[in-house]
Length: 272
Image (cartoon, rainbow, N blue to C red; front, side, top):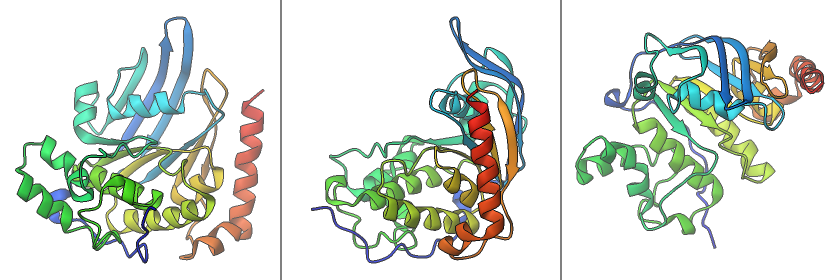
């Protein structure tokens, strides 16, 4: 049976060696096609340094494609995307850490070695990488599970290890592709609250793809609603601020509910 940590723990800032200055995101007249299939059409978006931008839209609207373009995993067929001054795909990739929907933990490695993979890939020795990643285990509510294999961990713990691995890469921009989609509703709500605390403790510029409008408005500063393919921005919404510290209180606030209804309306209109 997977084991669960006793609590999610308070997130605290990463060591100075793992932090970089903030980098903003600029998307200008961006379009992307796969052969004759247009995935994205003339997108314009901005995300200031240390802000969180959410992307919501119907399935197949190009959200994941846009995330890959921002992360430098591919170049657009039209327009430009830049992270600060970095406009080429290799330069964007150097500034961005990508977290896919699945945790992609290696089953033969321990939790600590999975968390340290980003550091090992940068050439750090195993012992040093373990020590640096291990400094965060207690802060991430993972203390005592350093030697556990992924199959022994709960879904929420696996996602926290995946997020820890993403953070210790030291990149100023994080691209998160539906990181909690595979979790049950209760664990997902807990992870949303935990991630909000983690980003408050160690701010990064973040782009979050999600199908969950409530999740987007809770975690993000601004939310871009995309239309059906080819994806274009049909509305941008600012999340209600300040957020209540308690997630349940935040998402039931009348102002939050009103903005959520606007987002859902924009989603319905974007499908037409």
